[in-house]
Image (cartoon, rainbow, N blue to C red):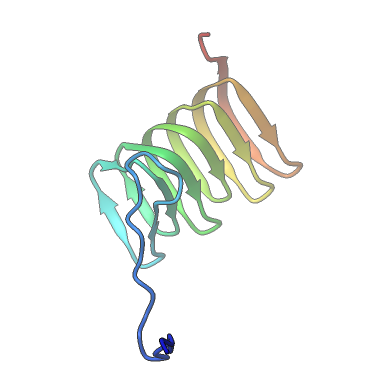
Amino acid sequence: MFSKTSDPTSAPVPRPTAPGSNSARSVLGADLKITGEITSTGSVEILGEIDGNITANGLIIGQEGRVKGSINAHTVEVKGKLDGKVACESFTLRASSAVKADITTAGIVIESGAVIEGRFLKAKA
């Protein structure tokens, strides 16, 4: 008697994400150059150039990405270039990374080939 037919032209309704959840992800494209402060409750992937401070739950600096400034995040992964100061729980340097920074973190991963100049400090418990 009742039947449900799907309409192939209707798009699924996106579910809102809860503030602070990891499902929110912002990608800043390779053609962007931003000067200023970036704040996000989700994660941010940087493929362009940022000159300023970044606060986020997670941060990924892509292979062509460049960041100059202070970073405060739960997790940080660097594939590109970073110059500044970092405070995080988990810090990962990929083989393609070049970093000049003082890093305060609880955990570190450094791949062979990564270039680092600076200091590592243990996060206060």
